[in-house]
Length: 330
Image (cartoon, rainbow, N blue to C red):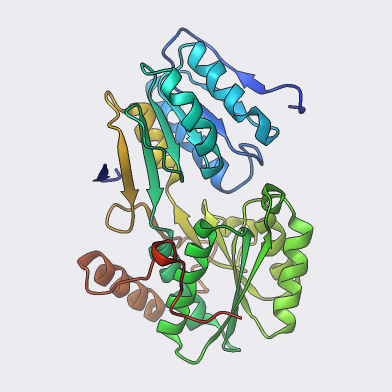
């Protein structure tokens, strides 16, 4: 079923907190912790917004390793939490096992798809948002070479890279796009040192704008870019504030709103819900920290492309449709 929805501890122990009675909502953060300044923190902000506005309480678990995923879901379900939100595609395999055992519990997974009558799957059109920041990179670059650092080498991250590359060449058809992935295991999300190394290598090839879609690894990318005097692009949460005047923009992914909506809903429908530009699910960040980097001409060009994409007049190729990208990356 596919539905379009408008978007308004140690290895032996789980970090688990709870308060209040049964039927509280709950969230399981992916590896990296809820204060990763990116994906998890955006999810946390959505939960906190719900709590502040409603006065309600929620349960949360911060995973310490992959083996805890199924245990965490069962623990929350047994405690009566409902709904239970899973942040991250890596939760899908465990959820496929757990969901059938708790038919009266509603599960929501972000960035993954699980086909079950009590599961809502939320995915984002990252390629659309990445296209917009790619246009900004292409227009801001002085060398004609920009780059991308991904976390774990998976189709989801290739979707970011491919959308970015398409936006870059839309702005500058002669531009060169360099792309590197950090690794092939979950450790790729939390290796800022390696992120910095990849960034320095890309700078050596002429890159003067780098887009990081790499979780905690991306913090190393942004830091190295600032240290070396080139522009960077943040991801998921608005990361412009991390290095004011050096972060060109951030590709916003409204994980916070997805969590807020799940916690707020009286009824959660099963199926796949896609949050793209039309639903304000993705976009680019403009604030006091980067306003001097982006001209009115750049804004006009990107906003025009945004409207064209929403209207169906401009199509951004989705890497995960066929595993290919129309733009060659080095």
